[in-house]
Length: 319
Image (cartoon, rainbow, N blue to C red):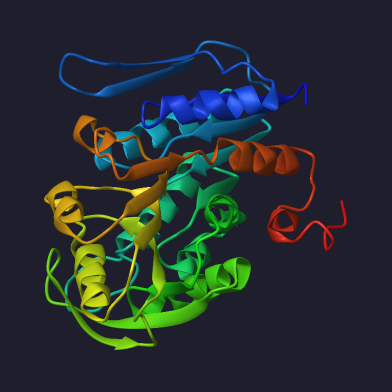
């Protein structure tokens, strides 16, 4: 572990500090400043030659600034002769632009992957990609962590009776099924139609919600439209308490207002993205830390041990 160094950009320094603390390592010394014209300047203030470097930086808002910081940080470490550079991206911005579904548009998720590799990243560690196929955009190893173990432990502790796990759209069914198996609940699906970037229509409910407590699971809450409409539909079908679990608390636009007005008892998120001051005051919001999970993954990568073993039951693990 003497050759392991953890650095942080400005995207989520508290999470980086928590990861470093979990590993019993100090956070690396680096400076990120702005030139008068707004250009970003990164300088690593300690020797990293021959070291295994992990740079923690989600590419959340401000997306472009955080992405540019990460690219410059990787380039600085590469030019300083680091042995291996891992970009730890708790939230991978642009992941939803993963396909060319109309004419004359970019595949931005692929472009970001290309930039990270050109900058000098040797591997990527990320959390709950919006589309798993984004891993295929890279020609370097990608370790894709899921937040299910952390959420499952929390909700198992609540001992919610008559539980039904609901996917707010067809694309999230696999994740919902995992939660249903982990928590011992039923499974239901909502047929969602996206009308625009901010408007959705929650159509039919496939499954039973009457007299059931609900756990709505998704990878992120952005504008809050999907979750709010899904909760309203479930309430119409006779659902009791409605809980929400989402890895990434993007919470932009009218998200806070929509969550407040929806028939939701609690919203549980993780710390992959810093919360805004308004979101931090939301009483229904509960935040779980992924720092221990990320720290263990970093340790395993550094020691060349299996990361996938993290998601097996203790009786199934080989190490």
